[in-house]
Structures are given as C-alpha cells and as structure tokens.
Length: 188
Image 1 (cartoon, one colour):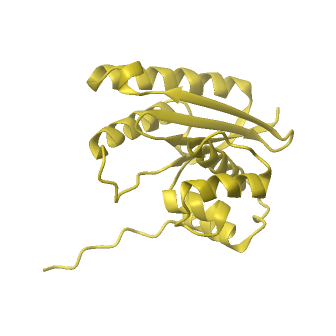
Image 2: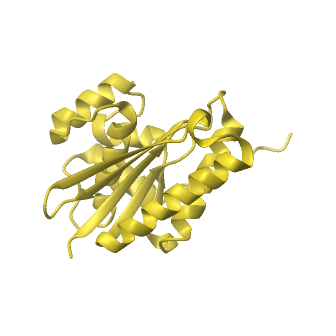
C-alpha cells in the first residue's frame, strides 16, 4: 500500500485535512465545520469535535500506511479566542495520539508553514494560496486548505531521505526535526 501523509489546519470554526499520496499524486481534501452553530458550545462542542476527528482518523488509518502527520501549532501571539482554540487544539491532539504513535506526529509553527511554501514566515493568506498553486499546481479553495496541503507536503518531506528542493524548505524540516529549546526568562 502506498504511504499517505496528512496535513491538518484547525481554526476556531473549521478544520481542513489534506491527505497526500506522493506515489500516485493523489490528494484528498476534507473540511469539517466545527462552528458553534453546527457543533454546539462548551463541553458538548469538544465532545463532538473529538468524536468526528477520531472517527475520521480511524478511517484514514485503514486506507493506507501513514508515513507522517503534520499539523499547525498554536499562534502564540493571537488575541482572539485563545482559550477556545487551545481547547480545540487539545482535542485534536488527543484524537491524533489515540490513533497513531507519537513519532508520526509533528507540530509545525504557523510561520514555518508559510516559509515552507513562500520562503517567508510572514506571507499573507493570499500569497499562500498563490504560492501553493505556483509551487505544486494545487488549487486550494481557501487558505485553510492551502495550509493543510502545505502541511501534508511537510509531512512527506519529514518521512523522506531525500532533501527538499529548496534551501528554505530544508531549514523548515531541520527546525521541525530538531526544535530549539524554549528560551528561559532572565531573573529579574
């Protein structure tokens, strides 16, 4: 069975998942609407998100050999809905570790997702959409899917012995494989 690579971009109300199979060139896109209007609020919403993602991940596990999974980490400077995003991110991570061993899971900083496709960690959403199309000829319908597709490509690169095509892509892969320890705060 060919190896699959998953890229996951979760936002407050939506989760985009891209499954990429390099051997066949096949790409599948799944979008989940986890808005409070569709999924409820509070613990009910978290339970719903967990159930949906867990079922989806279990189904993906049956379709082929997963080589690696890359998902977007938290945007630590964000001001809006931080607590809700943290809860949703935790639920997604729980569903992932309940399905796959931790060595297959890779957290990728939002700036690294942007850098991998554009060469800059500060690219805006429109540049991401255009860059994904220009680099890989994948026409993403929205920025969440463009990010998820890039994450699936990163997952494939993490599982490969071949270096990525471009130097800045290799820098991203090196950062994910060997993250720098967090900076310690200086004593006051």
